Amino acid sequence: MTNIMQVELGDRSYPIYMGAGHLDKAELLTQHIKSKQVVIVTNETIAPLYLDRVTKHLQEYQLETIILKDGEQYKTLETLNIIFDTLLAKKFSRNATLIALGGGVVGDLSGFAAACYQRGIPFIQIPTTLLSQVDSSVGGKTGVNHPLGKNMLGAFYQPQSVIIDVDVLDTLDDRQLAAGVAEVIKYGLIRDANFFSWLEKNIEKIMARDKMALTYIIEQSCHNKAEIVASDERESGIRAILNLGHTFGHAIETGMGYGKYLHGEAVAIGTCQAAELSRELGWLNQDDVNRIKSIFQQAGLPIDPPKSLNADDFLRLMAVDKKNVDGDIRLILLKKIGEATLPVAVEKNKLLKVLNDG
Ligand code: GLY
Image 1 (tube, rainbow, N blue to C red):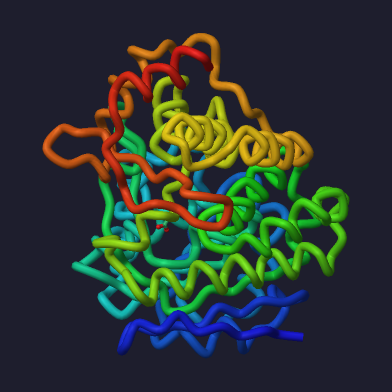
Image 2 (spheres, protein in one colour):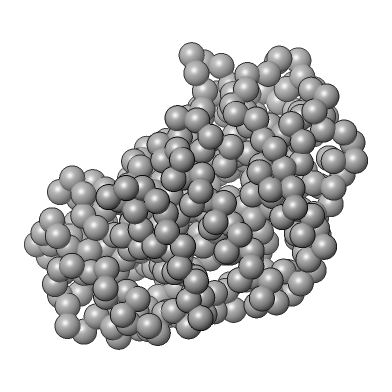
């Protein structure tokens, strides 16, 4: 069964198709391709697993495939150029369609390539990790990392459609599954206390890959994400709450070297730091913080910052963040479980206390 959810953005609205067996449904893909030229961007892990299942539907098209190296460390301008080189060498024109088949790195990179190539070509997301299915493939954030800051180069650029096949999670390794669960937990924390309670009760089923539980968390996450994006596409307000834990998390990813921690792992640690800071500010109590740490731990996620990053490292790294204004670090924190703040600048001594206690 296919569940279709619409991301409502006027003439840039698009559907998210959620369900099982979607890679084998040709029509789901081809109905959004309006030209003869198609390029699939994927990576070395995904290509042997799923590329043929997608190319099978595209025999009538002028098809190119680009297989990138797998990992956050390859989300760079250099990799972006590999995509441009192929598009130009093969004389792809402005109506060509780019298909991103992979996780968040492939999706972000490909989306940015689509946004830039000839000032914008259509693209379709086929996310293959839980993290990309519940977060990064929806909402049009595209981009690459810079050695000094995660996702610091990019564009808002919406896809034509997002095709989620829950069956591809069968081949996802446990670490990647857990990383995706971190972003699922985020939705409960920022705006849906009932969903957070449901997750607490069902975390074992999720980690055991119960299909109904996985389908439910994908639907709930996409529903939350689509609503937020529809009301604030370019993050001038409420969309920022999706960054809970991300300022700390991005500091960890950049500071430790891209790829050492998976994005979701860094977000789990960062969310625990944000929870501790929210407690310092009198918004959460210790029981709330314990509940948050406990669910991440049950998902097999790390909750403590790396020992090799000290408070000064964090401050330096957190100073490069898109939410900062006039040099002030601004963070998404929690008023309570189920309610996030908009970006707030906090007293440095409170931030330092959390960073030093970590
Ligand atoms: N992943 C955060 C956002 O899409 O806004």
